Length: 222
Image (cartoon, rainbow, N blue to C red; front, side):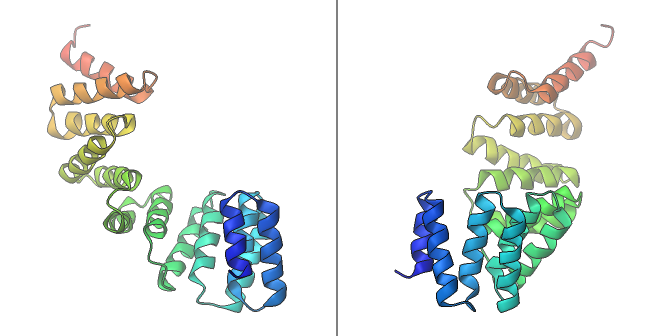
């Protein structure tokens, strides 16, 4: 097991100082290998040394412009600082450099959602689900995106799968309720969805508001 592998194992076990030691030794032994810089940057990100982490990722990219993992890690760092445009650019670069896992597509989709570009987010979230059909959070975000671009039939389909996989997903029930009320005009189903959301999360303000709106529609004189 080389120093990078030992460092990754230590990192997975939560042994930060040990991980730093191994990655430092890996850099000393091979200062032109971008992998150790990426790994060291990930450790620094974990302990919130973000400026230092960014320098390590950038160093990795300067050593190997095709280091997709460095672009991905830098994208995560920027995303967590709410720099969604910067994150988007780096996730796109990571994909161009060959990173093909569900996480990079999901995070690119989420960056675009935060940039209020749901139409552009859709194909990336869809690809994330294709790569990992069990990722319920990706499917939930995909459903929300579909609703935002008014593809309500598809949104209802995806959100229904979400609550089937996770019967305690209050937000999915709330958004199903909105779709049934606004698009299907099925007040009974909408009410059931809002009730279910409130049963799971009694302080779900939006579901409570949705239920009150339905009550006003049903009793306009009150």
